[in-house]
Length: 69
Image (cartoon, rainbow, N blue to C red):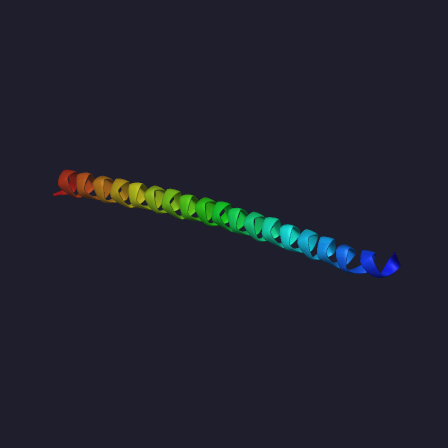
């Protein structure tokens, strides 16, 4: 009886290991996508903020030059 149970137990453990590995990989992929998306959003937000500030400074400088000249 003990001889028959060992292969079944090994098969069950292999299946459980495969399922846990699959779920772990899917979670890792989803987490990395979320991190990448958040990073990209932050980079775009900071870039837009920088461009707005630069164009504001250029606008102020051109108005200043217009009044002085």
